[in-house]
Image 1: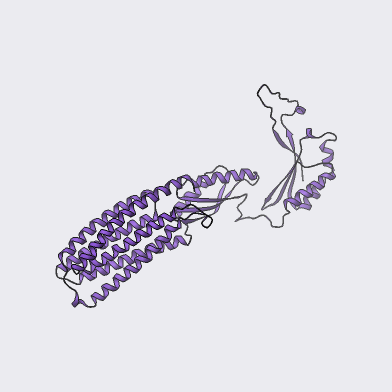
Image 2: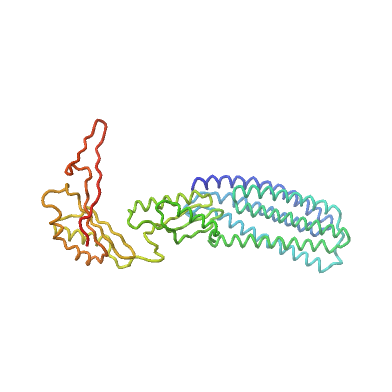
Length: 414
């Protein structure tokens, strides 16, 4: 994991523990007050809200467990880490809220079906409802501020869960006020509204978590940011086949980058690593896999029947050996237009005797080209730029080292 993501992950888990313990302490006190006073004051809405607080308490413990396990480092069974534990926790919370909400709706429906049995509500229920409303709204503002600071989807979901609690407490308070005013059916109606709100919130959380577990991609704006980072890398000509998927609060990025098809493997690898580091600098990215393409293989792919490197080298060595030559290296470029072969001969100063020109004239380059099915066959020769044979000599002084630079020059083309 990159250092920026690692630092953010540590801070996120610290904030999660702190805010969740605050929520547990508050929900424990409020749940006891709501259920005890709700039963005493004959307020079904307040009891329903107390059950809602109990569900909050359970969800807080789920968050703590998920937070503990999601911070574990990658292992043999989870190569990308355990960030999806948070997503699984969000899915569980969603299912829990749906069950609680449906139960509230069922209980309220049973009470509304028998209006004559609805008892009068005591004034103490209103006092508790107002206290709960103020407490839950304050908890929401605190949790949302902390969750947004560390960019945790699970903590943001838990914060909005607290806001739904505040909204349900407002509905409960209004229902109790109506019941105290003589309209007793408003209390079970308030309980039904709370149940619907809880179930709806659970559906939203559960559906969102299910999409993330199904490898949902990043939104278009974030994907555009990733593409821009790749394109800004020196040596990257284009980006195609970029794919993203959510991993908890982070993302995994896979992309194909286009580079000059004639550069070396090591240079292509260097460009890919540079592009990867640029993407990992974004704290939304957990890991990135960058594939190097010489061409856009979604548009044009190399022919599949081209000869392998082993065959090309063997053919080149056999043909050149017949002419008394030996290749220093053989380079191949497999492109959509065909196979390009470059044969590099040693520098002239490395051999004695007959020059390369007569020997190369005895090599049938056209026949070799046809045998390989190559589009182009070039013969180059190394040049010692600082060799004494070219009238240039270097002498090393005390503590200095001599060096020579080698280049290649065209020697023949077929």
